[in-house]
Image 1: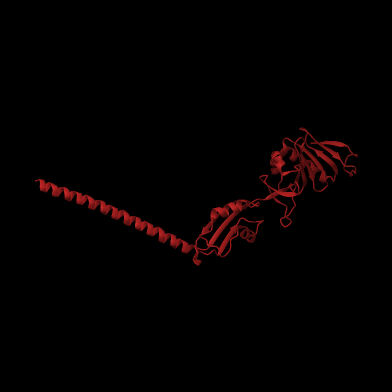
Image 2: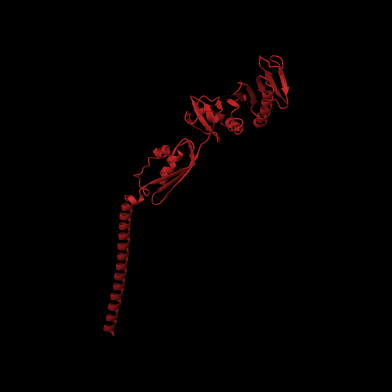
Length: 271
């Protein structure tokens, strides 16, 4: 009986050892297969990165009006030698949105040969004079120096003398920007910002001074337009229009009266 028990114990130990070895063999084989797959995959990916099959051939750019396709490709430093797989899309995106004229962008690759870029450009609606003239977009962002090729036919903000002061004047700029439209922009030459006196506008045609003040600018601007067009129709030359009063608009006539206008220097209530 004792001999049989010993033989049975040896067989059990042998079976247990065999199972452990079998499991270790399977683990080793799995590790070997995974390592081989990673090695082959990495080697294959490296070959694809240098393969002419994924060479960049087409760059599709949309949404650009002020920036040319050639300018953007040069700015991104991409060319026909670029491999589409190796392009860092995230870096390209961050570089795009760091461009002063680009507000936002989307970029993606379409294998095997195409890179597609869509940009949202900043649209200038005004200029601001600091050390020189800069563009201002609809959001009030000051984003680039004036460019003669793009144009400079916009109303000009004056008041701030340094870039550090723009934040202080920003509420006034933000309130005035909605007043600048395709219809009103050709009328306005200058918009002077004063932190204590508010907004003063100078017109294009006759350098007419228009005082809007600090409050209720949309309503006051509308009253100015009505008065301005009324004076233009009657060929009246005014020196300034004061819209700061709640119940009236005050017009001071210029020194040279027209046949429709009041005597020299007289103030007239309108509206």
